[in-house]
Amino acid sequence: MKLPHFFVLAALVLSGAAHAERIKDIAAIQGVRANQLFGYGLVVGLDGTGDQTTQTPFTTQSIANMLTQMGVNLPPGINMQLKNVAAVMVTADLPPFAQAGQAIDVTVSSIGNAKSLRGGTLVMAPLKGADGLVYAMAQGSLVVSGAGASANGSKVQVNHLSVGRIPAGATVERTVATALGESGSINLELRQSDFTTASRVVDVVNARFGADTARALNARVVAVKTPLGASERVAFLGAIEGLEVSPGQAMAKVIINARTGSVVMNQTVTLDPSAVSHGNLSVVISTAPVISQPAPFGRGETVVAAESQIEIRQQPGEVMMLKGGASLADVVKALNSIGATPQDLLAILQALKASGALRAELEVI
Image 1 (cartoon, rainbow, N blue to C red):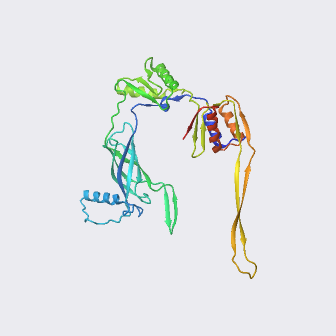
Image 2: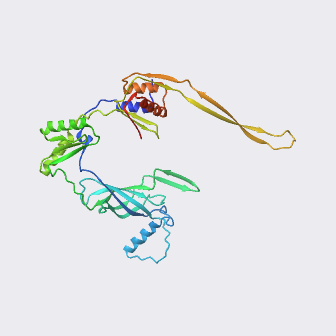
Image 3: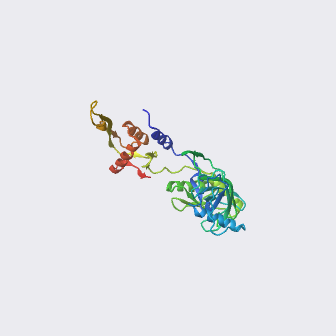
């Protein structure tokens, strides 16, 4: 029996047994994180695809302010008609331990009505953090992966033209202090809270570095004692990240995306004895034109009317018995055997959960 693709993917990916993973893959060191930066800037040098300045007055205001800072004073009341300039928002992630002078990538996004940023150059724009301080300065030529053309009302476009990237387009100007074990301990934060996994991490670390080196604070945080020297501390944390741990088995869960019809189940999903009935009801409406015209040499006009026929088709329902304690593979085969589509599966799983037969948490996203 051939299974639908969405069932096969779920079964192959989620049915495998739990295996050991590195601590660096399932946990992160508390405080070692990226910081978001943002800023406002201007992209110049566009080929007539910039903002329509009559509809985006902030673009002309920004140009006027920039020219004033350069010693160019515009006459009052002048109406600039610019086509090669676009107002943009610049965003970037400041990586942990970033030092002054380090280059980071930036993303440039149009906030006006520019048609394309292709071929443009970002003028120096300060990037600020959540505290309002400037942490980097961005400038450079944009790389836009899209392409497009239009003529006489026809338009062709590939990918997105109003967002571009500048690789290594910003220079870090201010560092973010990160306290890494200077107090003699660090906290490991599991990416998913689980008491079993936290306990196993403690056991693995203590077995490698001695008793009382690590202790679990809760289902997510594990406190680890660290050496006092900076060099020793870095080597110690690197060794911890390389240790392998077998994560605890996840709780039974079914994720349903009601918008796309996607359904994903993990290997711990089981069913109690239950019966599922599935049937299809379709309504077919066919419309044919009916032409009425007068007799030869008679008076009157030809009239075109429509005649519709409505037919209701109902396929016989099927009842499938699901045995108690069924595994994921059994559930997949049973639902596939009754011809359940993704949309049918949404209703079937919700009904099984409501009846108490589905031994899993049901989450709709």
